[in-house]
Image (tube, rainbow, N blue to C red; front, side, top):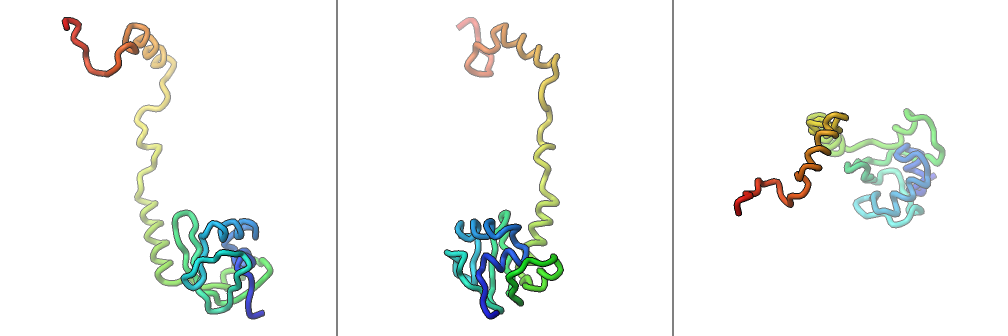
Length: 142
């Protein structure tokens, strides 16, 4: 076997769980072979080609080392390609960036109001707090 459909290879190399997912990603323009976008899942890939796959905001660039049209275990699938040094560095940088990024949930200082807090808010709104169009203090003498 000298050539293989790109959707079959991506599935066999375990980049995508199903061939239909691989086909969808190809149709969305997230796969490139040798720097050219792949327009159809029937595009053939051969040993020595460079395949770039964009997933989750990160582009993985791999060199095709083998072809297989059957999906085997992960260690066998990893022998079908070799990731480039630039791609490995980019993945490491992205992992470190995610590690140091703040957790969005920690930015919330106060969660949902408690029952007492909700009652206090409703009481404040009943006494004219909700009538004003801004949070500034209105001067009643004007």
